[in-house]
Length: 99
Image (tube, rainbow, N blue to C red; front, side, top):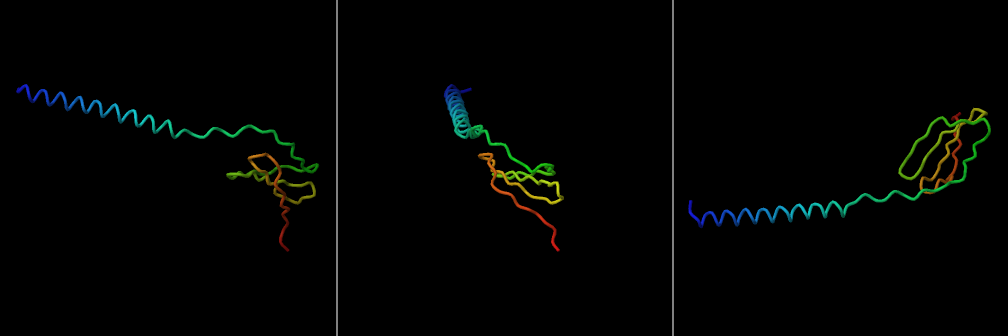
């Protein structure tokens, strides 16, 4: 083999090694900069008062709300909407049968 060819080959492999280390460092930097957001701070919400004899029959969640289906003692049904960020009651929606 020619000595000149060997020198070029060593230089090219050295350059590939440096480029690979640089690419690895860049990939690590990109992943560290895209960290997941920290979880929201914990909160303590006041207790939710339900009428006596009522039961929670179903629960559904969305991005910002929890909706509870509450069956009341008299047989009627209402939806209770709670804000997930604060744990506070947003409102209630009474449900009734159509005539």
